[in-house]
Image (cartoon, rainbow, N blue to C red; front, side, top):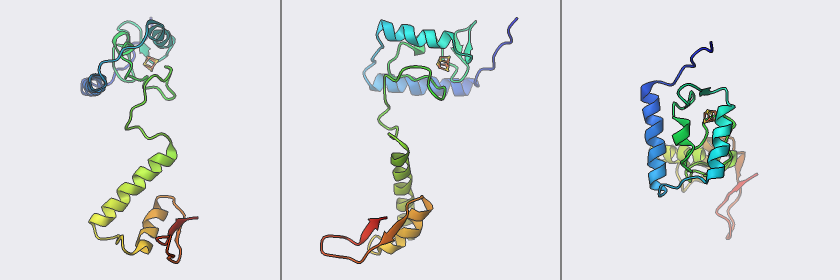
Length: 150
Ligand code: SF4
């Protein structure tokens, strides 16, 4: 007899469901095609994360037969076992974009704390270096504000 797989907590399952539902409604409730639905369920039935008796995914706790219908849902495994049908607009495209978002937040936090003065670009250099940007300040010219990436 196979051992019952551990599911996420009720709270985690409810949170995941609420997020999925919110995204689905926000996008106008788009569904997958029949062929896409079949491919998703095929992937789930071959997946070691599926609790076969309840047809629930043990990573997110969702009922895969419902979850697979919504175009806006994604397989939570890494890498995903489903073909990509929907890209969350808030998901950064790649590592560079993620790095830029973090750097932007760091600079804004520094600005709020008075650690960065936008009128003095050199004060941003240690902050940007912390974020992995190798940045130097050049002399100002008429067509340049004095800041450049190496
Ligand atoms: S949603 Fe993904 S991780 Fe979950 S059972 Fe299906 S294929 Fe596996």
